[in-house]
Length: 294
Image 1: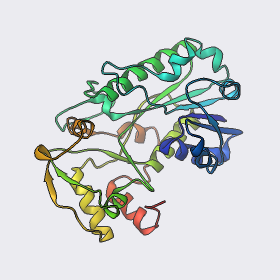
Image 2: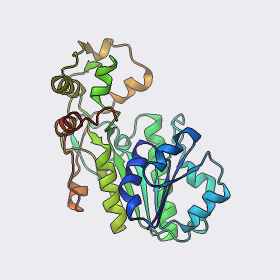
Image 3: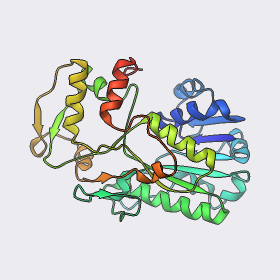
Image 4: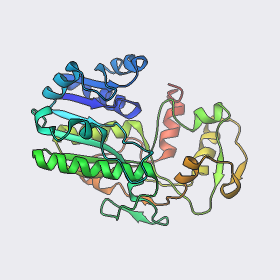
């Protein structure tokens, strides 16, 4: 396997950590020179990719057998801007990636929009609300067309709220930045970054196509997660704040405009067993293992 991860941020680096040891080559890209060391700590090579395709990146694209695309589309575009990587290739997908055997596109469960708290699966209607989710849905369609045109298997991997070492409720409580916002009936799904890596690895190894929700078993009110983190850690619990009167940015408030319970049955049926099936198990592990600050 020759793996290329475009946009090796929090999730992309976790995928590289999982797959790099078994790869003939593993490469991750970043826009920031300062983040190259984080990529290389996974055992992968790092390349700068700021939009333009360098000769070194072109060579990596030409030899890649497995591609994970994690670069976000323009979230400012209210109508959906499509995928920035494919836009830059200008219809030359097959020529740029001649050796490709599988593509994984990291998307978001935000493409489903609001479903009034009901359980949904991958066959649910997509009716995104925010500009960032509309752009993700447009990018998904770009990848469907590109992969189909090139005859390559594509997995669209829809992720819920991502957390893990260094990005979790303990960190927010310790920094005094946690908020216990209460909006009656509101729930969110979440996903530990290790399960993003595990599920993507399984799909890449098997070159599995399809649309998959990679999300936990237990959608829950956001205040419940804060309370559990405080219970485990002993950090002070912030007071409840009513959502309607809370001082929130437009982006933060927009997250609460989408309410749904997202099923992960399909990825389980494909053979994946979640390492952290719910936030309680994940928080307990982060705390007991001492990795919450990592």
